[in-house]
Length: 349
Ligand SMILES: C[S@@+](CC[C@H](N)C(=O)[O-])C[C@H]1O[C@@H](n2cnc3c(N)ncnc32)[C@H](O)[C@@H]1O
Image (tube, rainbow, N blue to C red):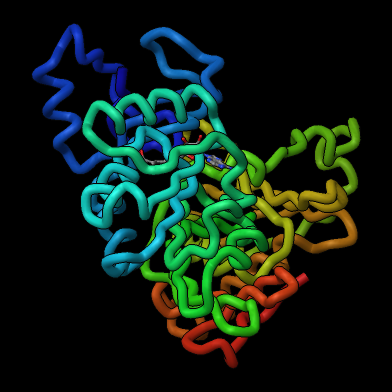
């Protein structure tokens, strides 16, 4: 059973069962769309959609661009994290030989189905069940690592299991939202650094998912606007809402995330909250307005932080994903940069 379409939310079309409608199934499988194959870590069953897609066959054009960035050479040893359907592992095995491919999947059901599919197609990469953030030490060192679930932190174990000069390709998501595929080269000193090569929208690595506290907890049970201080802003929340500015804001801010409460008349409230549950801000967007009402509460002025992160990005000429990069120090901390590692992206807040 597959649900074709955007895998980051519930925008997929209805389920297609290969046994019932093989022609539509085939058409979907040969289209440039991702195919959701599991919801809610397998807790959801039936033909309807679940709450959150948790496994998919990624969009073919994304798979191919990531494989191109991985730049695998004949004889390279490759680790894939996130076996999913097994398609990517099959592509790697076909091109570089099953003995050179290790693929790790956290979900035992996904792993078992993928292993059966790979076997039926004549491939035998080492397919293991485990937390891919730990890499797969018994087969290290690797020349290449391809991660097919998005990261908020680059796992230390992965960097340590790649030989110097080796390459890691992974979707890297900021806390704020916005995500790009990063291509890191591992250095002799155990650090890894490299640019983003494009935008992406993957499901998160299972252990790095975010737990979010409800807005009402931030208001502490007090009636609106609780202890929020009112001000006005001429920056429209509309300017900040695209994937690229969200990514740029996320590289500069720490632990802030947005959520839009949308109303029927086209207006919405942009909520900003911090992960530590100390601060919140709300900005009321009204179509056609020139100024927008803001409430902020807590030790952090979250709208101020987000606005200044947005302004910095705007002043740099609104750089695209490919002008950003990250460096992961040997100790594990990542720092983001623009154009070169010596030009750090500023941190606000
Ligand atoms: C977008 S799918 C991967 C697509 C896959 N490469 C393919 O060719 O079909 C993401 C997969 O990553 C898996 N995953 C999530 N967290 C993981 C982790 N910590 N270690 C290994 N796999 C993980 C999910 O269970 C899911 O199957």
